[in-house]
Amino acid sequence: TGRIGDGKIFVSSIDQAIRIRTGEKGNDAI
Image 1 (cartoon, one colour):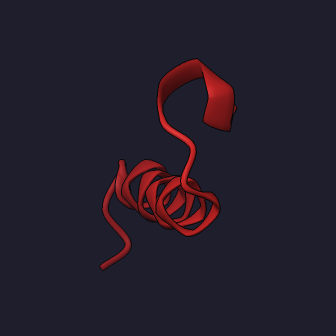
Image 2 (tube, helix red, strand yellow):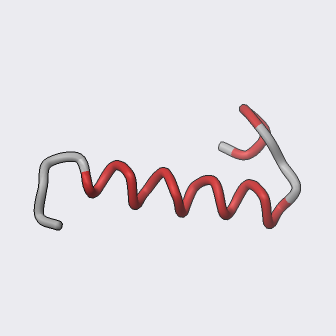
Image 3 (tube, rainbow, N blue to C red):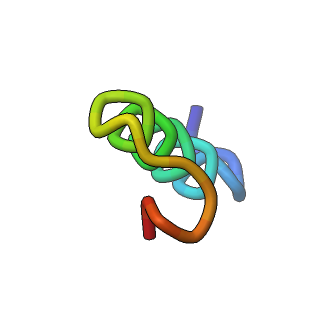
């Protein structure tokens, strides 16, 4: 959308997807 914060939302979504895929949660997923 070009608005400020879109990048953060996108990165957060990818981050969450990776955590779910690896089965790791919280600090273990970082």
